[in-house]
Length: 98
Image 1 (tube, rainbow, N blue to C red):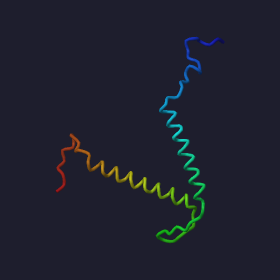
Image 2 (cartoon, one colour):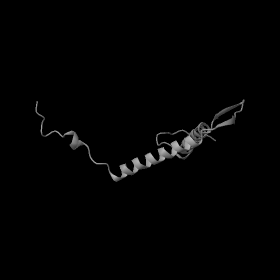
Image 3 (cartoon, helix red, strand yellow):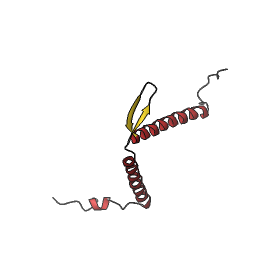
């Protein structure tokens, strides 16, 4: 069966990456490489003191968990700040407290 000449071929559909896409790819590869190198350097076990006890864990795991907790706290703080700044809804006719 012959192919319809009006339909794009697979070669026609693929366009070259823009400079911005190339820059994002290179940046991602560089940051990924730095992250992998950082993880390999920080594999030694460290003692972590918890509220109810202590344990030994790889340093990179402690760093990653700390960063994730920090990101979570930041997200919660930003959401709370946006709620405070948000103007009252035009359809909301309730009186404010106080």
